[in-house]
Amino acid sequence: MIEDERIIWIAKAQGSKSGLKYDPDSGSIAYLPASACGLAYLSNISADDFSRIVEREGFEKADQLGPNSPKNLDQLSQMVEASRERGYGLISDTYELGMTAMAKTIINPHTQKPFGTVSIAGPSFRLNEKRVEELSPALIATAEKLGEIVHLAHL
Image (cartoon, rainbow, N blue to C red):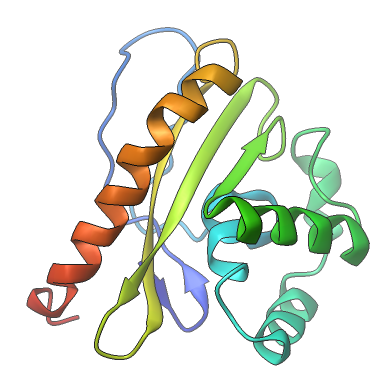
């Protein structure tokens, strides 16, 4: 869910019960430059909003995250542009080593503004390029369906 230009994880469904798991606590705030949700969101906002949010987020956390975490504005801008062209955010070894994630922004049809994101994450060896391609239509369709009913949430 997007609140005050931040993404807050509010719900999750865990697949595998063993092995590599990424298990954010409900209420955790995503670091936008390195998360698939963040890239999806940043690819759906104005240039002014992008600049303000990136200035607030900064790049100091990049050294504490995965090796592919963007370290500067140019790297982040390239990732956001790729997300915009693809239609969803995609990261690998960015938030955490060994993890791949993909996310699509949920757009409120009444305001045409981002309301939240929906994502799929997993170990990179399972969520490989082929699997991402297979799952992307379902991810996009899910975000669109959620957008259609977002007005029912009353948030």
